[in-house]
Length: 300
Image 1 (tube, one colour):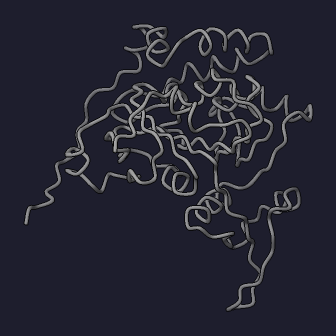
Image 2 (tube, one colour):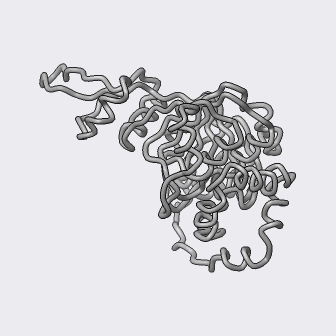
């Protein structure tokens, strides 16, 4: 059965007020287009979860979508603090629940495995454990040694971007992998945006590249350039200038709202956004082909 739909229809069907939303991807393949569509549709009271909140969550918080942030490290990568997040947290308007990177991935792993929690060896993050009561100490039943436990994280909906998928939702990624697989398997619903929608035969020709089977996907959407200003390996580069500019644009509430009006509310979809960036940006972010060696799977 085809799960191919527009991004607007996918968000309308699968993202609800009050949901816990997880945007997957580590520097690479960050699902900006899906986040912007959530802003356009005016979702409210969301809990936003992510291992490394970057400027996407700054934008979603600025748009009034979120009431809580569950995270490990937040910042504008290579630039500094997320100005909107910091202001909202310091003002007491945004609740937070902070973990180490390893603890966040452990939480997702527990959720993906259907477990209520998973133990970890103590990581030295004593301040986090004191600040966050979700960290618990348990005893290893075999050695008697203390372990740190964290609860499963089970998003209502996970958003992820990929290079390609078929219309069933079988999804392939290459390049840097983040927590996409764990976040998808832990979630109740999954929205995939993809640079390309390909024939099922293309997916079957290279099955080891499939990180997510169709049975875990709620909706798949053809959305080229959906990760900008992050990057998609083989399609376009990271827009470092954009990250630097966001630091300036996010300096005041007024300039943030102006940016949202121009770049989110003022464009109908991702294609309009990409065209608005213009040919100079397109040329600057273009990448040269660099093909991997072919693989012989054999035929029996």
